[in-house]
Length: 399
Ligand SMILES: Nc1nc2c(ncn2[C@@H]2O[C@H](COP(=O)(O)OP(=O)(O)OP(=O)(O)O)[C@@H](O)[C@H]2O)c(=O)[nH]1
Ligand SMILES: [Mg+2]
Image (cartoon, protein in one colour):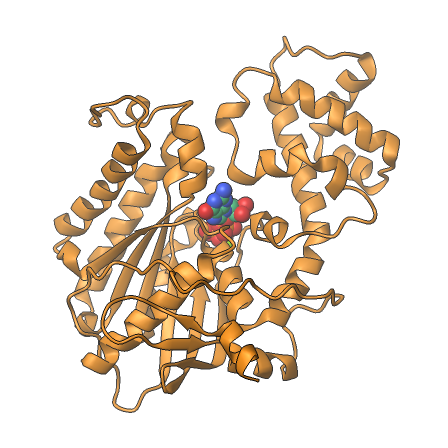
């Protein structure tokens, strides 16, 4: 019993007393709860032993959060523009506190990944230049057919080994074509590079595959995690995930009053991408503006002093890879680094833009926590979620 408890107990070194957060109780409860994703069950790989040297969130926030007396519920809300990584973080919460749901989601993602690969082919074949170098007429015809959504669906519905090999050949043509690499989004290359595995009939998605699988959120989703032990107390967490598309952002603000902690997710890797909703606009600039709108709204709340805000500067892994090929200074003219293509200088410049945005909106940046993250990281739960919850509870108790 003792060893089981230790397995799931994370000791966080965030300053002050060392406290334990145990998702074990939540897991037990989850086993009895009906899962919200109906799909076949596969064996769940228990997470690694949480490390004793987990990274703490910085202690920027100098405000004490205080909830209603005797409250034991914490409401978190994910905000951020489309594709920034909110739902990936939602999955990471599931992984920690509703493991069975995570496992079911992973199993169900087989079909989503296949559709994702199909959509990538349709998008990329439409971008292929006239000069694309095809090895055969067969592959050229395939490239032409896949541009059409219906034809590509038909092709993917009737896959066999020969067709998968043709796709692999076409993928080589696509990735060697000029201009394609620059407009990729995180998971495109990841899945296309291994399409011969993930289109096979016996494919089982790994945890990373599930975290990398992109499904645009269409409606606000809310999840409740019961019996999350923090220190000696048990808490109920709720987590709200919203749609980041420009058209839906107005709806976010309606429920701000009930939220205790806002998690604003911004993708560092957006610095060189146009928005899908408006291709003339840079995604990172849009995220900064949206963050400004959120700050402005928060400032007007009567109970703002009781709320926490963290900005997760996400996709650090992808950002590091991209910066060496396409410098931030190419896209943000005000950025004059000492060293070209420098990752640290670049990410600090982006962080500073968020800090300045908060300040401009009348929010003291000390009241906002900032953290560089990679939401697909296996240890995201242990590194970020645990310390976020622990810090929140600590502040509430102090308050
Ligand atoms: N490489 C990398 N990919 C990430 C990271 N975080 C998220 N992604 C990927 O980015 C894509 C978009 O992530 P989502 O979580 O669906 O984005 P979202 O914010 O929920 O977007 P909407 O639902 O449209 O509002 C997915 O393919 C994720 O796997 C990260 O830290 N690194
Ligand atoms: Mg989403």
